[in-house]
Length: 398
Ligand code: FEO
Image (cartoon, rainbow, N blue to C red; front, side, top):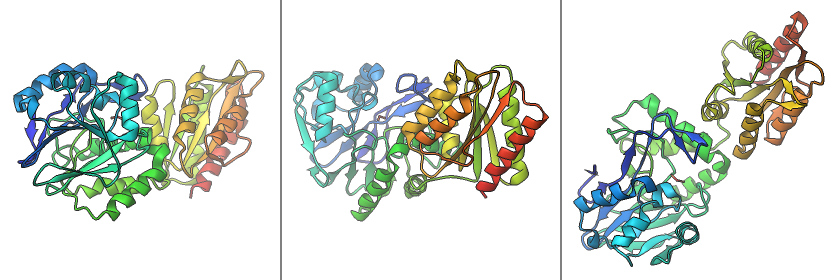
């Protein structure tokens, strides 16, 4: 499959309807994804921007041959070295060896490190230009968005920004354009992508957007490397990124717990009741971490003003789903969020203190330094204490 975006640009990527896990097993992709590759024809030269993930390399090259004699590709642009975009380079460059590969200096290292090939690399920096005749590609390094090698490029005359992973979504759709797809699905996938991939780099997101805006380049379209292409009001996703990068939250609190014999679940529900008593307008969402998709929980935490975390004590520790989630939260470096802890125990009862420590390490400001520990199943007094914790949380977020 390929399709013409306009007289100069043709999409030659791959829609992956089957994808359900990305980055190994780390990131869920409920709605599949796409690996977007673009063939750009100027009056004199032709460039290919990015390729596809390795399993689709053969299919990609065969498809590309239907679109163009491969020898007519003058330049390859590798905006990013990660294998979901560079995976077809070995197969493609076996067909057209010596074709120059334009990429950032860091991408030379990552591509050499991954493929161990001495391709004809042409490292570029921000502001460098590549003429295609009647139009040119302008390069903008985008270090740590989200790899050191990430880069954007911009096509003059057509006024298209190709930002690679930025502004993307793991969202398969044959409709291809933002104005044609279900808006709830689109923005759910866009915010999940931001929350799980870009959150640690939020300060860089803000700075990079300001830098690109400062270049005064008109933007008629944004064509990322995953998901749909932004053609209708393309700057709407840029504005969303500015919001998401600035300590984003909605009027929401997320309660995440794991439970062995339902005691900590009941505790979670008591905390929830307390929150609602304090502020009925506050959205409260409860997730059993062991039974829910971790990346969906991360997205809900991203949208929340606070997270309240519960685990029973086991072997003087916490259940592994909670330990794993809080470790992930630490890496994501959420900004300006609060936290609190609770949990059941039978004898030693360390879990609440441990959760408080993990929350603080992950950058959450504790609303209550102690949290609530419940011995065995929560009794009336314990339920009252849990509700009081909930009320404190609700009041703190008003
Ligand atoms: Fe879509 Fe960072 O690769």
